[in-house]
Image (cartoon, rainbow over all chains, first blue to last red; front, side, top):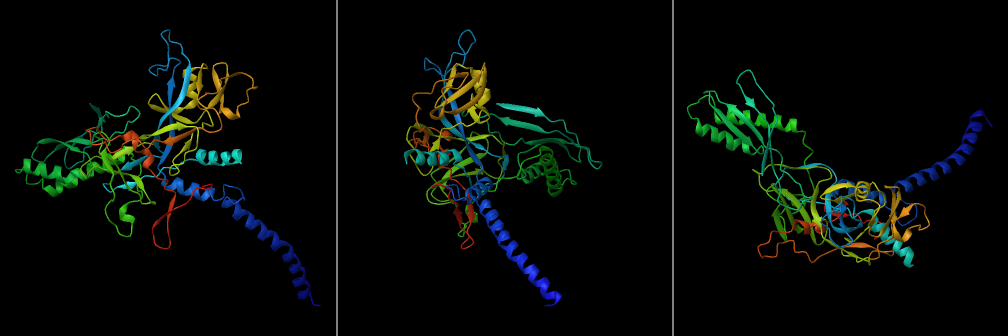
Length: 130
Length: 314
């Protein structure tokens, strides 16, 4: 066995060890990028990236202050102190995610991301209700 | 209501003397109090012609340049050096300078019918109305992202001023009612869940953090479906009521009975007539928000059509 053969054999063993590890690491990184942890959020990053790109609008809750006497006209009593009551959700609003200029007469569709709370709620309900 | 704000910008090129000033014309909406869309300020200037006359000019958009140049030329035919072309060039330069000083955001370029293979006009138009007198038109028509209707936005016409939507600007309402059951209507049902005191909510006609709302309201105020923990008069946390730890220290508001339980959803209220109902009422801008689709889309490599990326879990 000459010196070249010894080297080839030596590196072959190294390759046998390193290659499977490298492949395993690559697969893991790729899976993580795709959100592919095997859980219910697989593909979350693809969805989020596309939504970020196109969904100009996002949802914001609108709250109304309902006083104990059911009126919503003022948050303070006659003496200037809070009267108490509860903040309840009202008809919500869609808000611009980023500043844009509308300069075209061509109708362009507006996207609205539904938001993760909805999907999280769905999933947690599935868990709760079995 | 007209509010004029002089900008005080003076520009004096050597060949001809201009005294221009920038004015912001803000027409306030007679709309929902939370809606404060304003048209882009118009560029106004006093243009001194070569015959010595000074003419006020107002440019709402670059499209006004030609008509204003034509008007000036017709009004001053005895000024031979002020040709319509040179006037238009001068006015265009002023408008571009005005735009640069205004630091406008990037134009919105969403999916449009011109992107489709047919390149046709908008179809199945269900509603079309201008938001106040801003020049901004909202339309409900056949969505490009899939079946059903979608929400569209455009400028009224070429002569209308551009409209700037700032980040955080409310564009339209999302009609919904509270339900204890997750009624899924096209994926538009939304869980009422505030996870952080930093979450922004619309209250008192403005977008503000929940923390600010609670601090102003005080510890005696509860938040439906949630419990708020307080340290003295400062809110320190918010969480859904069904996950509340009632043994936690400090003051904890009791859960709202109406929204107690595992589910509290905001379900689109499809009873809202966004077309105006034909009884003379203006179209309800508060009622079109749920027509907007999730445009988590990408163009298909196969046929170029927009394909929706399904949100995981659905």
